Amino acid sequence: MASPYGGGHVCGGSFNPRFVHAEYDGSEPEPLEISDHLTLLRAESSAVAPKIFTVEEANRLLPSLEPLLRRLQAKHQQLRDREQALEGFRARASRDGGGVPGADIASARAEIVRLLAEIQAKVKDIEDWGCVVKDLDRGHRGLVDFPSRRGSDRVYLCWYLGETAINYWHGLQEGFAGRKPLRDAPSDRDD
Image (cartoon, rainbow, N blue to C red; front, side):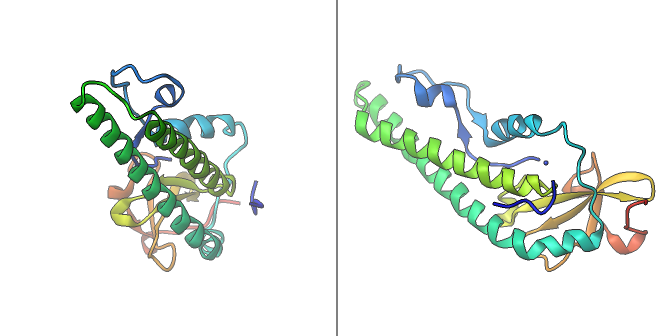
Protein backbone atom coordinates (compact mmCIF):
# COMPACT_ATOMS: atom_id res chain seq x y z
CA MET A 1 0.00 0.00 0.00
CA ALA A 2 1.35 3.45 -0.88
CA SER A 3 2.25 5.58 2.11
CA PRO A 4 0.88 9.15 2.14
CA TYR A 5 3.41 10.04 4.86
CA GLY A 6 6.75 8.81 5.49
CA GLY A 7 4.55 3.85 14.09
CA GLY A 8 1.23 0.60 19.54
CA HIS A 9 -0.37 -1.93 21.28
CA VAL A 10 -2.40 -4.49 19.42
CA CYS A 11 -4.34 -6.78 21.69
CA GLY A 12 -4.95 -10.22 20.47
CA GLY A 13 -4.45 -13.90 20.77
CA SER A 14 -1.17 -15.45 21.69
CA PHE A 15 1.25 -16.74 19.09
CA ASN A 16 4.65 -18.30 19.51
CA PRO A 17 6.88 -18.58 16.43
CA ARG A 18 9.10 -21.13 18.21
CA PHE A 19 6.14 -23.49 18.39
CA VAL A 20 5.18 -23.02 14.75
CA HIS A 21 8.58 -24.16 13.50
CA ALA A 22 9.27 -26.82 16.14
CA GLU A 23 8.02 -30.35 16.42
CA TYR A 24 5.31 -30.65 19.04
CA ASP A 25 6.77 -32.21 22.18
CA GLY A 26 3.73 -31.90 24.42
CA SER A 27 5.03 -28.88 26.32
CA GLU A 28 3.33 -25.53 26.26
CA PRO A 29 5.61 -22.68 25.17
CA GLU A 30 5.32 -19.26 26.77
CA PRO A 31 2.71 -17.44 24.65
CA LEU A 32 3.68 -14.16 23.01
CA GLU A 33 1.18 -11.44 22.23
CA ILE A 34 0.82 -10.09 18.71
CA SER A 35 2.03 -6.83 20.20
CA ASP A 36 5.45 -8.47 20.84
CA HIS A 37 5.86 -9.03 17.12
CA LEU A 38 4.58 -5.55 16.27
CA THR A 39 6.96 -3.95 18.77
CA LEU A 40 9.86 -5.59 16.96
CA LEU A 41 8.45 -4.43 13.62
CA ARG A 42 8.10 -0.87 14.92
CA ALA A 43 11.63 -0.86 16.35
CA GLU A 44 13.03 -1.51 12.88
CA SER A 45 11.43 1.67 11.52
CA SER A 46 11.79 3.92 14.59
CA ALA A 47 14.90 5.68 13.26
CA VAL A 48 12.65 7.96 11.20
CA ALA A 49 11.26 10.99 13.04
CA PRO A 50 7.54 10.49 13.70
CA LYS A 51 4.96 12.33 11.66
CA ILE A 52 3.28 15.04 13.74
CA PHE A 53 -0.38 15.42 12.78
CA THR A 54 -2.72 18.35 13.01
CA VAL A 55 -6.35 17.45 13.71
CA GLU A 56 -7.16 18.27 10.08
CA GLU A 57 -4.42 15.97 8.73
CA ALA A 58 -5.55 13.11 10.97
CA ASN A 59 -9.20 13.59 9.96
CA ARG A 60 -8.24 13.46 6.27
CA LEU A 61 -6.79 9.97 6.81
CA LEU A 62 -9.92 8.52 8.41
CA PRO A 63 -11.71 7.57 5.14
CA SER A 64 -8.65 5.51 4.13
CA LEU A 65 -7.96 4.20 7.62
CA GLU A 66 -11.45 2.93 8.43
CA PRO A 67 -11.78 0.19 5.76
CA LEU A 68 -8.19 -0.93 6.32
CA LEU A 69 -8.83 -1.24 10.07
CA ARG A 70 -12.04 -3.22 9.43
CA ARG A 71 -10.09 -5.69 7.25
CA LEU A 72 -7.45 -5.92 9.98
CA GLN A 73 -10.08 -6.77 12.56
CA ALA A 74 -11.45 -9.54 10.32
CA LYS A 75 -7.95 -11.02 9.92
CA HIS A 76 -7.42 -10.72 13.66
CA GLN A 77 -10.64 -12.68 14.31
CA GLN A 78 -9.51 -15.36 11.84
CA LEU A 79 -6.20 -15.60 13.72
CA ARG A 80 -8.00 -16.08 17.05
CA ASP A 81 -10.20 -18.76 15.46
CA ARG A 82 -7.16 -20.67 14.17
CA GLU A 83 -5.44 -20.38 17.55
CA GLN A 84 -8.55 -21.86 19.20
CA ALA A 85 -8.53 -24.70 16.67
CA LEU A 86 -4.86 -25.36 17.43
CA GLU A 87 -5.63 -25.43 21.16
CA GLY A 88 -8.41 -27.91 20.41
CA PHE A 89 -5.96 -30.15 18.57
CA ARG A 90 -3.57 -29.95 21.54
CA ALA A 91 -6.34 -30.78 24.02
CA ARG A 92 -7.47 -33.73 21.91
CA ALA A 93 -3.89 -34.98 21.64
CA SER A 94 -3.45 -34.72 25.41
CA ARG A 95 -6.73 -36.51 26.03
CA ASP A 96 -5.89 -39.25 23.49
CA GLY A 97 -2.52 -40.07 25.04
CA GLY A 98 -0.29 -37.67 23.12
CA GLY A 99 -1.12 -38.58 19.55
CA VAL A 100 -1.20 -35.36 17.55
CA PRO A 101 -3.11 -35.23 14.25
CA GLY A 102 -0.09 -34.02 12.24
CA ALA A 103 -1.93 -32.66 9.20
CA ASP A 104 -4.37 -30.68 11.34
CA ILE A 105 -1.58 -29.22 13.46
CA ALA A 106 0.55 -28.36 10.43
CA SER A 107 -2.39 -26.73 8.65
CA ALA A 108 -3.36 -24.65 11.71
CA ARG A 109 0.25 -23.58 12.26
CA ALA A 110 0.68 -22.55 8.63
CA GLU A 111 -2.58 -20.57 8.71
CA ILE A 112 -1.53 -18.82 11.94
CA VAL A 113 1.82 -17.85 10.40
CA ARG A 114 0.09 -16.58 7.24
CA LEU A 115 -2.52 -14.56 9.16
CA LEU A 116 0.04 -13.06 11.52
CA ALA A 117 2.16 -11.96 8.54
CA GLU A 118 -0.90 -10.35 6.92
CA ILE A 119 -1.82 -8.56 10.16
CA GLN A 120 1.74 -7.32 10.63
CA ALA A 121 1.87 -6.06 7.04
CA LYS A 122 -1.43 -4.17 7.36
CA VAL A 123 -0.44 -2.65 10.71
CA LYS A 124 2.88 -1.62 9.17
CA ASP A 125 0.96 0.04 6.31
CA ILE A 126 -1.01 2.09 8.84
CA GLU A 127 2.04 2.89 10.95
CA ASP A 128 3.98 3.93 7.83
CA TRP A 129 1.47 6.77 7.55
CA GLY A 130 2.63 7.91 10.99
CA CYS A 131 -0.32 6.49 12.97
CA VAL A 132 0.03 4.15 15.95
CA VAL A 133 -2.28 1.14 16.07
CA LYS A 134 -3.09 0.69 19.76
CA ASP A 135 -5.79 -1.95 19.76
CA LEU A 136 -7.70 -4.00 17.22
CA ASP A 137 -10.47 -5.03 19.59
CA ARG A 138 -11.53 -2.24 21.96
CA GLY A 139 -15.15 -3.38 22.00
CA HIS A 140 -14.65 -4.50 18.39
CA ARG A 141 -13.52 -0.97 17.56
CA GLY A 142 -9.96 -0.49 16.47
CA LEU A 143 -8.05 2.16 18.36
CA VAL A 144 -5.52 4.37 16.57
CA ASP A 145 -3.43 7.27 17.87
CA PHE A 146 -1.91 10.09 15.84
CA PRO A 147 1.23 11.79 17.22
CA SER A 148 0.52 15.49 17.63
CA ARG A 149 1.34 18.56 19.69
CA ARG A 150 -0.72 20.62 22.09
CA GLY A 151 1.29 23.74 22.64
CA SER A 152 4.83 22.48 23.22
CA ASP A 153 3.73 19.06 24.54
CA ARG A 154 3.79 15.91 22.44
CA VAL A 155 0.45 14.10 22.69
CA TYR A 156 -1.70 11.63 20.79
CA LEU A 157 -4.87 12.47 18.94
CA CYS A 158 -7.10 9.50 19.76
CA TRP A 159 -9.62 7.84 17.43
CA TYR A 160 -11.44 4.55 17.36
CA LEU A 161 -13.43 2.85 14.67
CA GLY A 162 -16.96 4.21 14.60
CA GLU A 163 -16.07 7.78 15.55
CA THR A 164 -16.72 10.13 12.63
CA ALA A 165 -13.83 12.49 13.42
CA ILE A 166 -10.91 13.05 15.76
CA ASN A 167 -12.45 14.59 18.87
CA TYR A 168 -10.10 13.49 21.66
CA TRP A 169 -6.47 13.56 22.69
CA HIS A 170 -4.39 12.13 25.54
CA GLY A 171 -0.86 12.42 26.87
CA LEU A 172 1.78 9.98 25.68
CA GLN A 173 1.61 8.00 28.92
CA GLU A 174 -2.13 8.33 29.65
CA GLY A 175 -3.73 5.98 27.17
CA PHE A 176 -7.39 5.63 26.27
CA ALA A 177 -8.62 6.17 29.84
CA GLY A 178 -7.00 9.62 29.81
CA ARG A 179 -8.85 10.86 26.72
CA LYS A 180 -9.84 14.53 26.84
CA PRO A 181 -12.02 16.49 24.41
CA LEU A 182 -10.08 18.53 21.85
CA ARG A 183 -12.19 21.61 22.52
CA ASP A 184 -10.38 22.06 25.88
CA ALA A 185 -7.24 23.61 24.30
CA PRO A 186 -5.58 24.47 20.98
CA SER A 187 -4.76 21.39 18.93
CA ASP A 188 -2.46 22.41 16.09
CA ARG A 189 1.22 21.65 16.25
CA ASP A 190 3.77 24.39 16.83
CA ASP A 191 5.31 25.60 13.57
